[in-house]
Amino acid sequence: MKTIDKTPLLDANGKLNIINRIQGMLKYGFSWPANLEAQEKAIAQLNKVIEKSYTLFRNQQLGVSGITVPLIMIGPSGIYAMEATPLKGLYQARGEDWGTVTSGRFQPASINILSRTARLAKILQVFYERQGMKLSAPVEPVLLASDPGLQIESVRPVVRPVMSDAIDRFAASVLTARPIYNTQEVNDFIERLQNPRPARLADQVPEPAADDAFALQDETPFDEPEPSRMQSFLKSPKSDALIESAPSDVEFALEDEPSPTVMVSNPYQPGEKAPPPVETFEPAEPSKPAAARRIFGMSIPQVILLSVLVLVEICVVVGFVWLYLRSG
Image 1 (cartoon, helix red, strand yellow):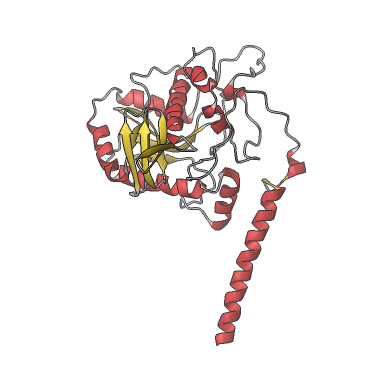
Image 2: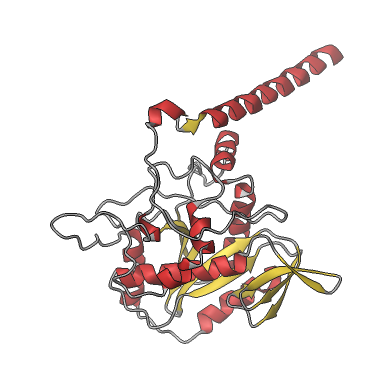
């Protein structure tokens, strides 16, 4: 299986050094490294079974929409929008409901990753439809459990949950499924995801509508890691209507040149509070000049926290050196 990795802040070997790890946690949330590790585990299991006729995109942004899908697998049997979660414990998936089971009672989770994964699949399908691509089947949403400690009880869920010990069987079912796309169609889907077609613009570019969720973008979307615009959109009552509306109602902002990959903050740690639902979409306020509030791409609080962490590292190293010299 060919893997195209668009994850930011990784070095040439696909790893996170200490500085990039801290910077990523400041930008995307403290659960970001754990979610990347969950993706790596899931990809390793898929690679054992999936053949070369399939391509996997990791953290691929959809055009310049600012929306990133964690895992996208494209092949003859279809298109899959997948999320890998590092959660542990006993969870239950009931339709669109997602929560824990305590003493035999269902308790809704603060973050509904089941509904989020389903909406990501719808968004990916809308993206291809806006690109003029014809899909023979809907994009299938899949939730992958990377940790064996996660057990999921399913009752007609909207997403296909796959536990850690069943990822190889899921991969085998993908390979043996009836092909619905030929090689040329698969290549077209891959090419269009990497190089989106420019939007059909009139002589003058219209102003983005206030209720167009995909047009609300900041130049620096990670000044405030939580709540992210992606979370706000997916939790809004308007999201389903926007995703399922006619093609003329929702348009992606697509440009000729590819935009930098943007990671969406992943809110998958148990116990974390979900951002409040957003009822309406309003245009973002003009941001302040970047030079006035960012240093080396980071805000002042981020620079202070990074400095404190570096100082602690230096103190630890000095302490070890002192103990070594004293014992010698």
